[in-house]
Length: 353
Image 1 (cartoon, helix red, strand yellow):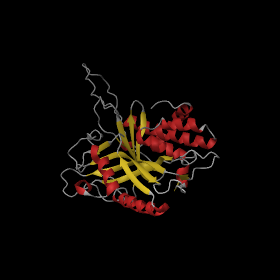
Image 2 (image 1 turned 45 degrees about the vertical axis):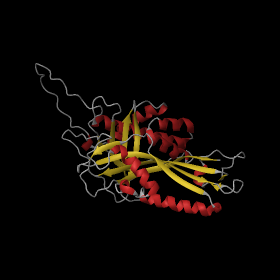
Image 3 (image 1 turned 90 degrees about the vertical axis):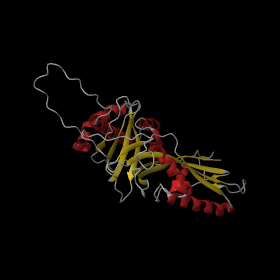
Image 4 (image 1 turned 90 degrees about the horizontal axis):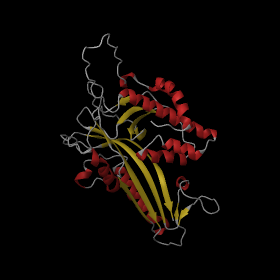
C-alpha cells in the first residue's frame, strides 16, 4: 500500500497496536521451525501465490489505522480537500465514490468506525495475476462486514458491504493450505456466471421478476421491492406538479467483480451497480419546478446568493452508487435463486437545471 503523506508515519506507528487488536490466528499461517541442517541439494521453493494471509493481515491492519487517522483529523480542522484526497488513496472502484459521499454528505465529518477481529479469505491466484485481491470478513461497528482489497498497483479497498440482519453468509471453501478458490467471471458451474449477476440484478430492480431471467434472482429489499418503489415514485411524480415524469435505471458499469467458491458448490459474488433517478418537469417549464430534497442539496452548487438550490426548473438527476454481495447456488440447483446478502450504498452525485 502506497504512502499517504503525513499520515503514513502515524499509520505505521499505530499498525502494531491495531494488528494486535484485529488480527486473527485462523487467518495466519503457522510458523515453521528452521531446519537444523540444510540438504546437500537445495530444493526449489514452490511458487508462492501473489498474496498470502500474512500480507493480507498487514494490508487490512494498515487500512483501518490509516482510515481512522484521516477521519479523526477532520475533527481537528485539517485541510478538508487534502484529507479527502488521502482517503481516496486508500480506495478504488465503486468504494471511492462511497468515500466521497461519506465525507461530503456529512459536512466533512464522516463517522469513525470500530472493527472486530478479521477472518482472512485469500484466494489462491495465479502467480502472474494482473490484480491480486483478497476478502476480509469482520465486524464494523458491531455489524458483519465483507471487505475486498485489490492491488493495482497498490493495495486499496475496492468493495465493502454490510450483511443484512438475520442473514447468514454461506461458508467459503478453503483448501488444505488455507486458501480459497476464486471463480472465473464466466464460470459455468454456478447458476449465474459471476459476470452476469449485476446485469440480472439491475433488470429485476428496474422491472420486477419478469421473464425467465427474473426467476433467477430472489425477491427482496434490493431487487423486487426496488421495482415496486420505482412504480410508486412514478405515480407520485404524476400527482406532484400535476404531471412530473420519473424514471430510475440501473447500470452495471465496469466495476470489478469478485467471486469465491462456497462449500455447497455455489459462489459468493461481490459487485457494484449505479442507479440514476430522473424527475422531469414536462408540464410547466416556467412553474415552481422540481423540489430538491435537503439531503441532496449538499451535492449541488449553491444559488448566487449562497443559499442551497431548492428546486430544479426542468430536471433533477440523482446518482447512487451501490455495492452488493450475493450468494449464487450451483448450476445443478433446480429451484435455487441468487440472493442479495449484503449491501452498502450512497447518493454520490446530483445535477439540477
